[in-house]
Length: 342
Image 1 (cartoon, rainbow, N blue to C red):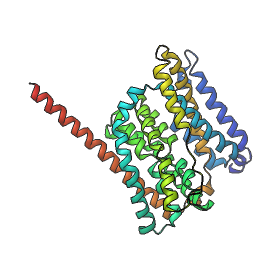
Image 2: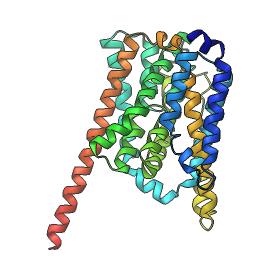
Image 3: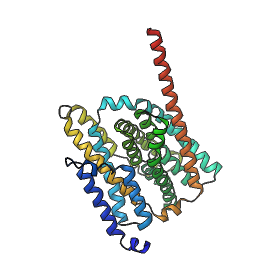
Image 4: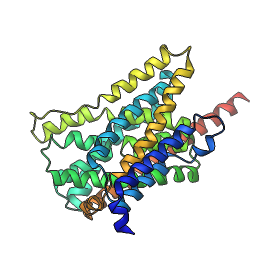
C-alpha cells in the first residue's frame, strides 16, 4: 500500500488539489455551499500533512515556491476586506505588547537554547527569531546575516514548521475552551503562533473579527524583521549582508487604504477580493502541509525541538495571561463606571 502511494504520489497530489479547488469554487454556486463549507484551513493543512507523510513529497520546488507567493497574495487580498480605522482600533493593544514580547522572547529563547540546553548559538538564535516575530520569514531574513549553515537553517525551520502545524489545530480549540472573545483570540494567536500562514489560518477558523485582529497584529509584528536583522548584523558583526524585507506587508497596508478610502462606496468589490483571498489561503495551507517530510522531522532533533516547545509555552502562556489580565482590568473599570453612574 505504501509503495503504491509513493509511486503514484504526483497523481494523488494533483487529485487532492483539484478536489480542494473544485469544492472551493462550488461555494460561488447557489445551493452548493454545503460542498464547500468543509474545506477549512485546518482541514487543508491536515490533508497536506497526511499526503506528505504517507506519499512523500511531490513537486517540492513548485510546492515551496507557490506556497510562498500564494500566501503573500492571499494576505494582501485580505487587506481588501479590512477598514483602516477598525483594524487599528482592534489591534492597538496587541501592537503595544508586541514590542515587549519580541525583545523578551529573544532574550528568553537564547537563555533556554544556549545556556540550559546547549544548543549551538546560530540554531538557538534562529529559533528565537522565528518564535519572536514571524517564523520562517524571520529565519530566512536573519539566517544570511549571521552566516548560518544550511543545517542550522533546516533545523530551525523544521522546528518552527512542526510547532506551527500543531498551533493551527489546537489554538482555535483552546480559544473556545477558554471562552476567549474574537479580539482576545486574534491578539493571542498573532503573538503566540509563529508563521503568518498559521496565524491567519487559526484566526479564520475562529471567526471574522479574530482573523482581522490576528492579521493586523501579526503583520505589524512582522515589520520587526527589519530592525531585528539590523541589530543582528551589529551583534554578529556581519554588516555587509543584505537584509530581506517582506514587501508584501507594504501591499497589505496599501490594500487596506484602498478599501477604506476608494472602495467605501463599493463594499462588494472589497468583499469579493477578500473572499477569493481566503480561498487562496486554504490552498496555501495544503501546500505548506505537503512540504513536510520524514527527513525534516528527523532534522529537528531533540534539543532544538525542546527549546522551541519551551519558548513557545512561555510566550503562549505569558501573552494569554497579559490578554486576560487586560480584559479583567477593563471589566473592573466598566463595573466601576456603572456604579458611579447609579
